[in-house]
Length: 365
Image (cartoon, rainbow, N blue to C red):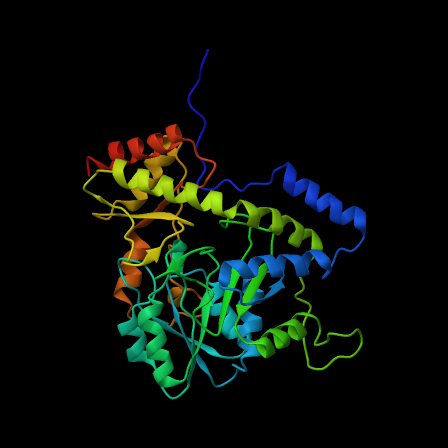
């Protein structure tokens, strides 16, 4: 006797036998922190960012924080960021003593609007932190000339965008630094961890000092640093995942293309992809019209279709910030977006179930 089909989760992290064997290999070897696996992971990840120097750390947030520190950004400085992002984007700025300044987004890509950024550049602005949200690259072709005119550093928050690109240039290879996350729900993971990609060898060395208590040689501390090292277990898992990333990205992109074709309800706007952008679909994020997003999400859950809202409260409205800024596109997106399953382990039939449920529920709105 067959029952109802299994629920489809919004994300399904992969931890397979290869990842388990890699972790066990490291544990049996005894070299478990900042060892050969970390060095190998850094070297292999460099191929994803045009051969830049790569520095592994213990999280994506640490990657952002240490990069700002390495660039000398701190008290008295301002960093322009989107409010429509995970709080870690702004938290990293505050953690180094600088102040985040929130810019509005392009309503099509959900990434920073270059015109909004231009209007916010002032005498205290030290850097820009564009977020490649949901796996879609920010408008670096417009943002880079803008910041070059003002002499600002660019720190790319690429935590959701492993393998994304704009005009064939990968994210993480546009600014002074790119920061990636390896949290389990990302397009690839290392159980936990982060990576910084930089073009400048001295900046890379500073990052390596900062992650390891300010020292390269043991007990020869050169600067004040922290303990934000990556373990070799994390790196070993990351290396396995990195090998699978191209295939998983192809699957995400194929699932997104199929959803684009199958979702036909007028109340649903499927994801936009800018000219020259390679979207890697960390999230497949639609808009639901008529103020019905929460209703649609509840009905999808009842139908066994997982979904998520990223992000229901913009950062500028969270308690630690609460700036009162007027960011109309950010607020509108927060009220309308809904991310549907797109992860690479989905089957064709599951993709059809997602689309059928969305059309059935949203078709009557």
